[in-house]
Length: 256
Ligand code: SLL
Image (tube, rainbow, N blue to C red; front, side):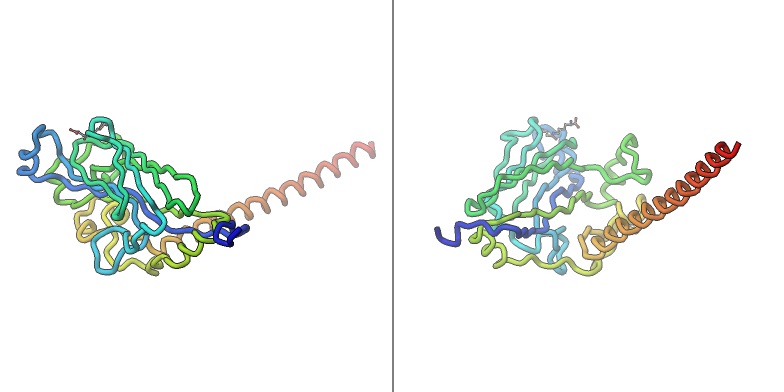
């Protein structure tokens, strides 16, 4: 057998991706132009590489993922014509207009040489801006306010991990190293992660995934681990004291 068809055991390799959507409010003219007049937003759902291109307003997408992704199928709400949308080349995205939020199933099929099963992700299409309270029960702001807040962004970072990849597929992956995430943000913090409700924070606020976010996450885990260890130690001491107390009481009983 040629080495190309052999799995490289004990090795795993990953590619960072983001998936999610952006949405903007339609202008009154655009609303009028649509036959149903019910559509309120234009949105784009996408699967992209995690790093953003420098000086770009596009979230993620610095790298073309076509070298390992064969097809992305976006399954829209059944109110849409042909709800199952296949995208066979980058950019892996679908742009539509509509009036409501719903769950989108995202199925990623890899190139045949990967010999990997497709993966399925779910994304809740987000049209309405995050509110100050963050409560889901709060009514979305009126269109005039939403327009001022600018595009809504809802993105999830993820890593696609290939374990024991075939040699040929591994070669393909290593030939396309992902653009590293920037150390820190190069743009203002977006509205919903900065100071919710503040118009200032929304200006130019396009989300960007960074290595700093990863560091923060690691720190959160490390802090949590330390808390658990400290708690454990506290209980260990308390247990030891109780055991001593039992021993003392036993002795007392034995003495009488
Ligand atoms: C809701 N459960 O009630 C959701 C469903 C469906 C949104 C939202 C398409 C409309 C069209 C559209 O926006 N569907 O094609 O005319 O909020």
